[in-house]
Image (cartoon, rainbow, N blue to C red):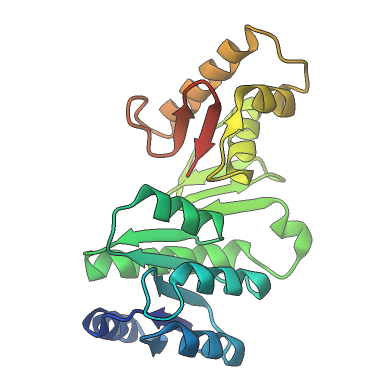
Length: 232
């Protein structure tokens, strides 16, 4: 059976080394580098199944590497950072990262994230474009438009067609704010009026309840007051 190839890039050698040990204990083949240039060369040379990228590197930052990966490949990318910076997270996800872990982290948490991303990639990201167009998957959220199925951290959510459509639009634009007007017009297909915003708000509230998300400090669907909503 072929081994799973994982790229690890971190200029903190101790962190890179212990990540390598834990991954090898799971029988993964690890390509480990302490700088971005060597990592980019490896990406072109080897067939990879997943990448773990530190944001801060001495030569090329992890965001640039992630962007380069997404120009050609669709394997999962997990970003690492020493800063709990919301902007960093948004930047990484916007560029195509699938998950984001803040240092310090527990090794077993990283391994769990790696396994989860590999499962989703194997299950959903085939080479058939028609399947890819119907699947959105990131940060534990998986939507299948064709089957009208939604999972959050591998837990199925029973969504109405309207709720599913709202979540799909937000996920398609993840990291970006979607105005209430745009959301209403895309989901309901009708002209936006003054009371339309209340309709959107009610459905957003129901979605948060089903996702077990806090309305005061939401983790997923966030309100940008006076503008609209975004998901990260």
